[in-house]
Amino acid sequence: MRRLTEHDQIGHDEDEIDRILSRQDEIVPSSGFAASVMEAVRREAAVPPPIPFPWKRAMAGLLVGGLALALVLVAGIVALVQSGRAATTAHFSMPVPSTLPPMFNGGVESAAIWTVLALLLAFVSVKLSMRLAFGKA
Figure 1 (cartoon, rainbow, N blue to C red):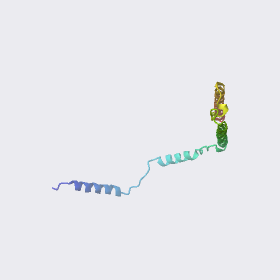
Figure 2 (figure 1 turned 120 degrees about the vertical axis):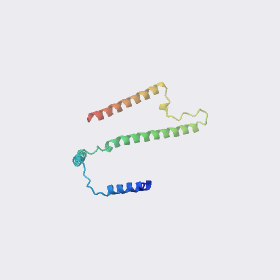
Figure 3 (figure 1 turned 45 degrees about the vertical axis):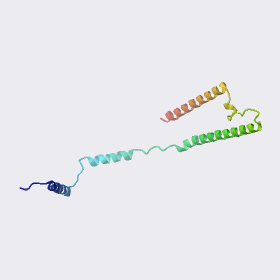
Figure 4 (figure 1 turned 90 degrees about the horizontal axis):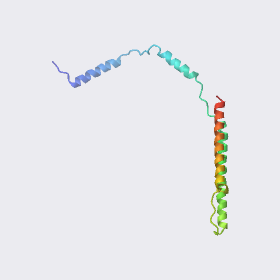
């Protein structure tokens, strides 16, 4: 009697795999598969397209923000240039003035005014955004 070696076993397994894979059976989907796929396709087709971002409305805010930033930069540069001129014309007899504009050199009153303005701006922006968000719902 002949003993099966590992090589014979591998060859036998390969023959069986080839036999299984060579069958020409028709692959049939399970019942209801085509109907469920078509239902999913119809559902996706019925979904409205996503809402586009309102660039026309946002552009105004971006433009105003950009102009405000440019204005602040220009005002800062002008203040630096003017303080530089004042320092050179003083012949160093007086201490060099601060590079900040005079409205930033105030005391407690100036800080209180800036704090109130910041709080007011925050309040207005929150109220406006809430009105825009809930007004359309």
